[in-house]
Amino acid sequence: MTSVLVELEPKEVWKHFDVLAATPRASTKEAAAREYVLAQAKKLGLEAMSDKVGNIVVRKPAHAGHESAPMALLQGHLDMVCEKNEGTPHNFDTDPIKVTRDGDWLKADGTTLGADNGVGVSAALAVMESNDIAHGPLEFVFTIDEETGLTGAAEFPGGILKAKYFLNLDNEETGTICIGCSGGIKTTGRRKVAFRPATANTAWRIKVAGLKGGHSGVDIHQGRGNALRVLGTVLQELVEKSAEITDINGGSAQNAIPREASAVVVMDAAKEKELKSLIAKIEAEYKADLGGFDPGLQITAEKVQRPEKVLDAGDASRVADLLVSLPHGVLAMSPDVPGLTQNSTNLAVVTTKGDVVEITTSQRSAIESSKWAAARMVATGFRLAGFDAEHTGSYPGWKPEPKSDIVVKLQAAHEEVFGQPAKLIAMHAGLECGVIGEKYPGMQMASFGPTIVDPHSPNERVQISTVGSFWKYLKTVLERI
Image (cartoon, rainbow, N blue to C red; front, top):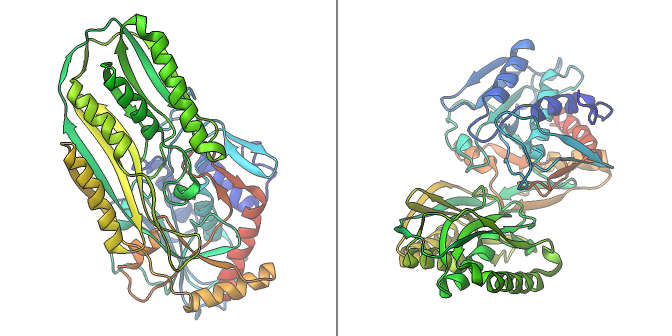
């Protein structure tokens, strides 16, 4: 076990996390993680199966004397968001995560940690191999490709699961039980663009960096900066000054607030002072606007080799205008749950691929009609700018049932372990409960887990002490339901 983890308790959980941290498991590339789970099931002599897309179902018999207890299901996703700081030499397809410790927190060196959902999966694996938890019959579901749109859950078949209670281990706040979540959808705009020969003599790469980023659901209300919006502002002002633009790229995932973005700008060398003055002005304006929400913003200009071709002026203007004008952030707060975002949209990724510029966004809402209204609003913006718009990856929300049997049982267990009931919450993020649960009417669902901060960004960290309390609570829940 990695030296950082070797002394941590509970060892039965951290030993599996140690393996997962060393296992590349980007979304759609979870093969090695799947093999590990299947190997564990085989070693333990447990029934295991895979569906057509690679989700895994494992069944474990009840502990002696608890055969008549209702069947419960533990669920987590195998993939992780792969984000790294610019300049971090890490290959997510081959390199292990470099786990570090800072007091009561674990984090990674310049990359996402993968505690989302690696800790939940590790806890489920620890339950699989346990022989001292007096639980009833259990099912375990390990899904693939959660982070790019819950596609593993969306493809999960009906008619397989037998459990009455669905326990998702992907909540990220100790002391809470999540009983509802938002649905989501991806809206993508594409435009074939024209190029022309560059005429100016000097090129700079404009870089936006230093922003916090974060989860586009749970962090969208935090007031953090959006690197694509900042870059668009710079490019819009430069286009107005007849600068030539190419190679516009930024963001990395539809469900992450973009932290970094860049573009190449071609101008006469004599305008370098003017360029840097403009960048300094825009940086100061955004810093004043973001304040303490996101104080690390940096906009830089670095000389690079002059490209042969640049975007046609009209196309450069369209892209810059869209990055400035497409909505981003909270659209509405919940009228029923104080502090809960009800509707939002994330301006997520821009890429230049050959002669096509693609802009990816995602919308979230617990209300299906509101989710589609937000998606149509964004698509309309795309079409007004001459982009084609496409909706993909729609998934449903999960309606809270605060008086269900499973919530009552979870609250009783929480009072037993912690001396007080948990706070019932709904999450402005997609959880697989709603997607899989839709195919199993009557299955009762809830989600809980340890404290994880800043998922989907290189600032991701998990609080060590809460993993211990999460494990104690999980064992108590399984023995009481």
